[in-house]
Image 1: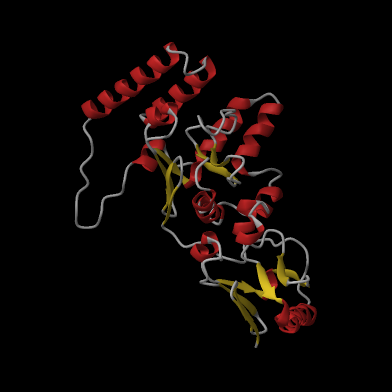
Image 2 (image 1 turned 90 degrees about the vertical axis):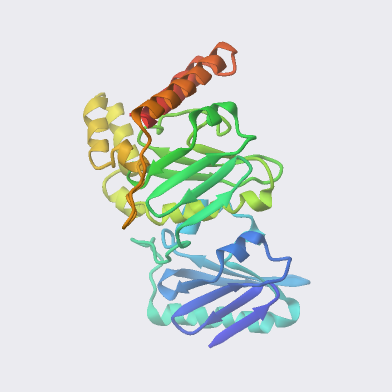
Amino acid sequence: MAEIIQRDGTWAFDGSTVRITPGLHRSVPLFRQTYGEIAVPLEAVAGVVYEPERKRGRLRLRLREGADPLLQATGGRLPDAADPYRLSVDIDRSGVAEYVAEEIRHALLIEQIPKEPAAAYLLPGPPVPVSVRSSDGTVSFDGARVRIDWSDTSDRVKRATGPRIIGLPDLVQVEWLPNSGYEDGFLRFVTTDSVFSKLPPEKDPFALDLWGSARRDLLTALVATAVMARLPHPSARTATGGQGRGALVRGELVRGDPSRLLAAASEDSVPPQASRTPRARQGTRELQPSPEDIHDVLLRRLRELGELHRDGVLTDEEFATTKAAVLRDFR
């Protein structure tokens, strides 16, 4: 067993798994403490390096491309301090850090772990259900559906459309950019219906605009990772010549036949009503809203959108896109 214990966290390698545990000190970022312990199988590791500096050094674990849904979801955009595969090492523990790195490198050589991209995720990602409250609203994922509940400070366009519920079969991809504290970030869920949307995050009803506490907003990467882990692996999308259903749709549009592929893209999708209707709990009955109630809510939201359009808050394009989203939810 090769192990190093630091205030920043602990790495322990038993010959087959690198177990990374975040430290409990207040200097350890909230994201790493919330993400928790990570067990990295040796076959997911591409390399390891110790970088000595004058006062402190760093251990860095490099994973194979496509092995980890967290790295796939965040695209290498996690701040260094929040990166769970980085460990700050006191200078007097440099020898131990070098030893741990050498043991991992030796095992990679013995086991002949390939450096090519992984064909499937080798780490599971966060458990579900997972829910995060951000500056723009609360986003939740239960393994089957994403739900966004807007906050009082969200844009009027988003609040007018009501809560956003997206079934996993309707998702094409997840896009995430952190809030740096100097520049806003976003968490966007791209669906077969919104793949061509050009709305900015602050008005996009499929996106959270991250503009508040950078420390708290970083936790949205938990939801992005949990969803990414349950979408088709990137290698599977590449094998079919595109990026899932969305790329299939885009490719057919380029060739001039949008209707055939748009229909094909939705064949394996859950109907909108199915993704919005909760399943009956065992031993109980769920009360469904009456058609009159649904009709009243629809009319109220359409009136609100019409007022925003007349007041100049919404452009013609924004009005058309948001109206289509509202009508789609009530089909």
